[in-house]
Image (cartoon, rainbow, N blue to C red; front, side, top):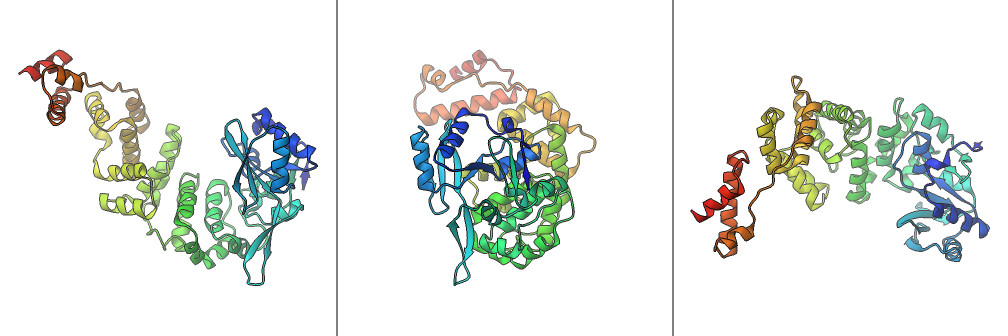
Length: 406
């Protein structure tokens, strides 16, 4: 399906260097088009997407074309025939057209092609196989636009073949359904995912985890996770959860308060773990050190909205743990327990507007009082800070310094 000047390209192209890239490829006798997320999300009225492109030039030809036009390139995926082009300090991935071919052993191999439809055929979902050129002309080989408008998420061709080419596509199917699905889940796609679910064990856990995290912040995360749990698709690394209603409540709270979705918060609400279980989940999913610390702290530190209803108690908690921690805990608590009598949105705004006091004494003040030794200085600072907090932050700097002398 060809749709002339169908897209407003000003929503995709924000740099003159991108135009230079298109000119460079055309001067080399090639064609280059946007593909995947940039086209799909623009069609869906979304923003904030990455730019992925495809060209009928080989990686060497593309690199030469860029060099001839003063564009820097980075070799980022020779095996996948992908070249990175540096545009305004960001790397745009440009992949040469490819097609999937099954070898004698039954494994799928990728080889170059100059056939755009063949390149589309080896992509996973119809909604991800739509291309657009710089003029806004759209090339849709598998009715991806119609599927996107109808909220239908399905594989291109035979679902089992698509999954066998890349087992991670099981998770991608569920992730995109949670993001764009408006109808019942495609039966053929679901059946293929269930049949081949054990092949997910062949995929690096980090890749599965990243798809899971993207799924959790999608609009239909809760019903999609239910389908995953009902069919034991994640059972090889995640237990089932019975807290899908809490996940749904959190999604609504986030929408009402106009916050960004946070996959850690949603995972926590989904499992409501103890500190030990939170640590196990963090290890299983290979969180970063910072992610693990945050996740476990939510389980360790008890904070209910009613504990910070007054300005005084709110200031105390925020000083101890930070605004973001308090916001996260209020959202988590409201999602888990409901809190029908508390205006959560108002409380969140009050947390944001709270002025965090600054402890007025520093280590050099202790030194100036004639005290030396890091341990001694640290102990005195801790003692003074506790006194200051207990006074509801009212003790002055002079009053605190007088306590050193005493």
